[in-house]
Image (cartoon, rainbow, N blue to C red; front, side, top):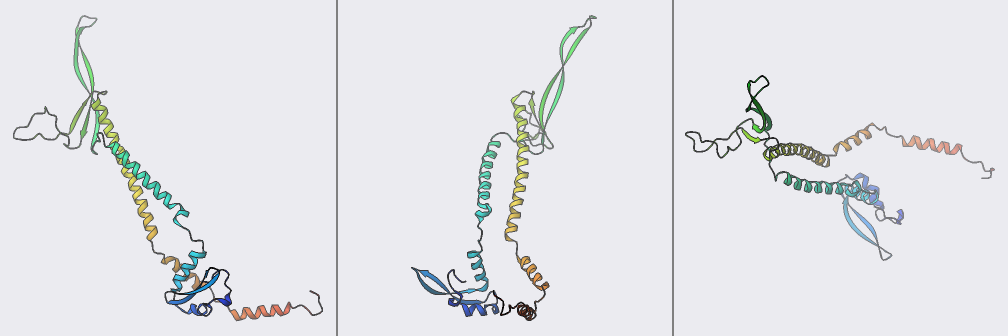
Length: 253
């Protein structure tokens, strides 16, 4: 907890720091801190654990990073903006007809008799004209029946039907019906993408809240594998090398 400009000999925590290694990380100790106020030093006491002191030191001197350093607030803002835009776009999609999931469009033809004419051999012939129509079909009766559909005997209300006729290819009913299928398909694709985003956010939350005990476990395992250093032997070796390298008195240095 030493401050810049404070000499070790003047540190009020000199004795405490010498014994602090004997304390557990969560045992409370009392320290004194120097504060410079108007060019004068002031001492004040505070209680702290070794664990809290380590966090304080690293946050003050370890260049602790913020969310902005990882551009996380900008990403969150972009996600919020995208969600707002998506809500507006979804409202536009659902302003018009959206087909149900089990509905498809079908194009079919009807052959009908046309005009009667004589061929080159003088025989009477009749044209057969082909008319193309469209319809929406469902796997079960889900559509409202038309107003002119007959009421079945014994029923008070008309039953739902499985198909809606959309008339010719260029009829607005056919065009809007097929656009409704496209809107349905787009909403399904959006649902898939939102599920991917939801899963990604859930994974991000899981990463943020995951326990970090494995980091300390790996550190303890590393410490356990590190051999003890024979301090005395090293000191004696260094002393011997120092004596061998001594400079004679008659040599100018």
